[in-house]
Length: 265
Image: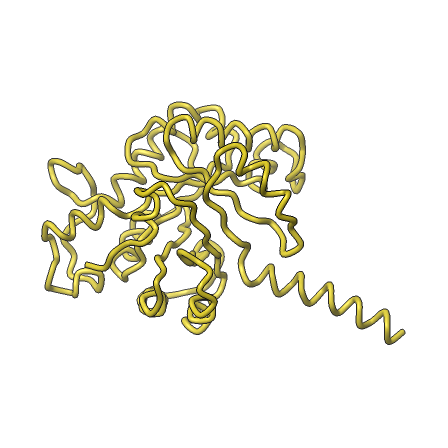
């Protein structure tokens, strides 16, 4: 089975850079790959419209380059979506809306193979990631599912309340704090920079790193300054992700459209 670059980089303690895509179009994956800048590309399946064939074509496009792949899945039907994504060839899973220890345990079990040793829920399905029939249920398959990176969004008030316990669950590799959902769950809709939101972000990063879990930070805008990232780097953060192409295009069009309109009127 294909080598998972993101897993290998985490094992080696290297820094990683990903980017997120709202589009399932394989051509956009190829554009990302041609830059040669990214270790993995993440499909925001939670937000976009797609079908199972799209996931296979997304994975095929990633495999043209020296990159790994990830999908962000909805909280509902997460077992079905995650396992079909893995079966399509997408190598790593970002689970959303985690609230409890039980949620975190379930996410790990969804990804791992169903053996007495790994105690997962992922069976020996004849899907694309195993060559349809070639390695279904094989030792190589079990190893690949062990290598799939399990990432969690920490974005609910309840998750912050249970953070120590959640991040003690074996098998969690990475977390990302979600200020949008967290501010909403606190009763401060849209206030991503509210002091209580920033406090929770710092808590998430510190506890994750203390427990040996990687903490990923999403760069919020194309107008970011490197010095803004330095505070995270000084905390020990090694993993960053650019925003989706939808946000990048929106910001670029608005900025330059505004400048041109000033010249015209």
